[in-house]
Length: 89
Image 1 (cartoon, one colour):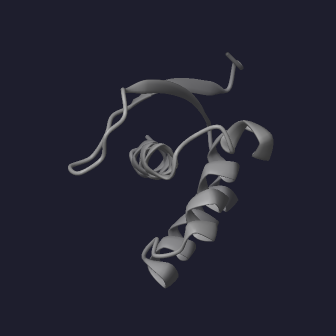
Image 2 (tube, one colour):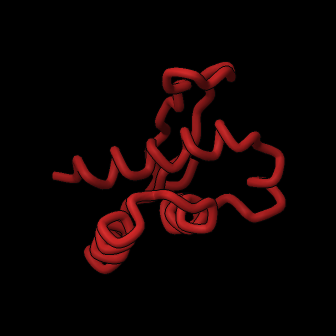
């Protein structure tokens, strides 16, 4: 795990079926948080590209690694990034 990453458990939301797993979420800069929040406010996370962009900002996973996850798992990863970055102290 990177020194500037936090290991976070990703749990399925209601209606999702996958086993919980852990991901490493990077510590955001203020610019990254601003981009994420602006993106969320503009799109309300309605498209898959937005979901992937937030995961890319918040993790060090490659597209090849992300392609191994189901859509539900990717949605869970995005939610974990948003939650972690929104609770930044």
